[in-house]
Image (cartoon, rainbow, N blue to C red):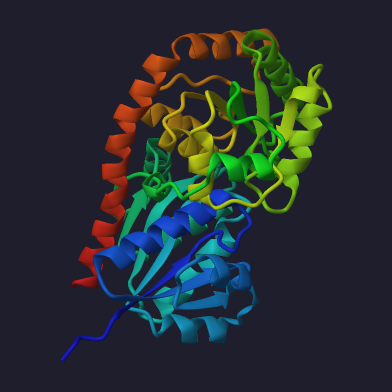
Length: 371
């Protein structure tokens, strides 16, 4: 007789709001299904979007469920997963911890999966995170800075350093002809990818006008220096990335050689698209991950600890984005371009290590389900 499928719930910033989080969910589900027959429930912020784009058996509208309704869903699970992604920070941590406390009340084992933590400066939120983390079976984090922060706030549970599951995303078909029909740039020319974003509560110390000017000056330099086109990659669904991309373009002298992606693409399609590019400069973590998967050299602009943590994992230079001048940033970009072959080799070498660590997340899940 075939044993019943194990039932796993996954909760994070899911629902199509951000392609980085969608890449995380895609990778988690793929790893689970590859390992064993399994029944997956996703706690989503947009259930219809998640049903459309992910191979989940059940999807619930997490923030519209009552306490009682949430517990009824949780009681059916063999394991509840919180993560992955940068969800444990001052403004949002308590929202995501709600299901952790309810899962514990329902008697369901809990795993925290490849999260980033911080900033956590509010004493009440730090205390609540510590309380929630001490209820789980095991915690995995995707960067060393989160590991250190959990130690700092006194979390007693075992914490393992793994990696972001999005590094396991596979490219999806996207032909040059399809790209030329959908977008306004020439895939055969010199292409530089750029990623900007709203700063929000993760980086309240950075002035938006200052960062727009910095990126605009850098984009103009890239166009002048390499006769390039620059293309902005919006990963945020709610138009914030599009607005900030156009905000940068408005500051550029060579705005006619800048484009903002118009189409909607999956994470795997963006990886395929980036293979046509020569270099990338970006703020969003998953834009940098997609660039690494496409094997193109890049330079990160670390507005928050999750970016600097990722760059440190790849042994790449980090810079204080809030204090740097346009001249300093351009000099760093120029140096990165001049050493791009060495940079690509280094990224590829450490990416293989990160993929191995990312697979550890699923090994932890399998160990918990086998108990």
